[in-house]
Every structure is written in C-alpha cells, then in structure tokens.
Image (cartoon, rainbow, N blue to C red; front, side, top):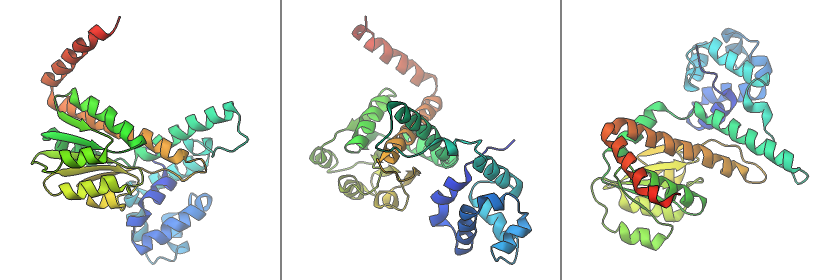
Length: 284
C-alpha cells in the first residue's frame, strides 16, 4: 500500500532542484493535472516533447513515487477533492468567525498533509544523531521563532542536555564567543534571512554544527546549515502561511525530541519521570 503524497505541493517544493527536463514536465503537470491523470507514461512523454519515458520515470521518483501508477492515483485523488487540497482558501476582510475557524483549521491540516511527504526520514535520523551527541544546544531564533526556541529548549533540557535560548542577539554573541566541540546551534527562521541568526551561525562554524528550520534550503540560513529542514507553505494575503509553517516546524522539533527519548532508552525515561516529580509541588 502506498502513501498518498500531495503531488502539486511536492512539485512546487522540489522544482528548484529539478533538471530542465524535469521542470518542463513539472510545469505541464501543474497546468494540466486533469489531463495528466488520463495519460499513459508514453503519452505524457509525447505531449511534453520528450523522446523517451525514462525522463518521466526520473521525474516521479524525484517526487517520491516508486511507479507511474502511484503518481497518477495520488494526483487524481488530489484533484478529485478527496485530499485536503480543496478545503483551504485564504482569509478575506469579509470573513465571519466561523469562516476564520474553518479556514485556519483546514489550512493547518492541509499544510501538515503537504509537508508530511517532504520531511525526509533520513534527514530526521541524521538530525537526531547530531543532537544525540551534542554537549550543548543553543536554540537561536527571534520573535515568533524565539517562542519555538524557548519551548524546544525546555523540552530538550528535560533529557539532560545543557540548553540555552535567549531572544537577545548580544547575549547570544557573548555566550558563543568561543564555540566548543559538541556545540549544536538549532536555528529557526521562517524566511532564513534573519541576520541575527545567520551571522551568528556563520561565526560558529565549523566548530559548532548547525541545524536549520527554515522555508528553503537555498536561503542564507539553509545554505550554511549542516542539516536543513525546509518548510513548504503557500504565500497568502494575511501571512497565515508563516503561522501555519510554525506548526510544521513545531512538529519537526517534536519528532526529533521523541526520537531522542527512544534512542536514549530507559535512563532518559527515568530522568523525565523524576522531572515530573520535581514539578509536582507546583500543582494542587
């Protein structure tokens, strides 16, 4: 049984890394999805001006599909309205509270669904291994990203790590004046353009390892990271794309966190149990 991956969002997210021939196929699929689901692999090669089917095979494999039939069924399911794609539209100035509720909930569901197939298991495994061996973890981010950093630092601290999170650039610069072997900078910036994040990360390389949560691996932050988790969202009028991207980023942090709990075994679970008991006096 195959996973029903979102085809159109995968195309948008991966087009920058496609060959010219693959981009040609991708643009045809984007413009003519209803026609593509009716075509054989030979017919798709013909209408896109290709001489062989091998280019189509490489194209759907780039999107994560093992066969042409799987690719077509996923695309057909998507455009037939049986996936989350049809459930979301942008907010408008005339929306009621009910509209806001429906659009936000459905938008979050859709964004998570889109990113599910884009979050690589290999990338998660590499990120978990890097964090597993960290001596100190610095969560670097500001504004809304800073809120994610604070939450992440609290979680990983419970696993016994020496964690830092501070929304002051000067504080971070002083603290990382002399980065050490075993330091990991977990940098969060939706755009990947925040100078306070990018410049600090650059200064700490190559001694410290850099994990990035950002929109694109081709952003300034993504380019300097040892590991980059890109987040795909659509640009919208009310900037809800950024808000929904935060849910994906939060889930990636949680996946890494839970992976470490499993990897570290019983000792970590015992440590977490002790931390719960330490907090118990704060509750009635």
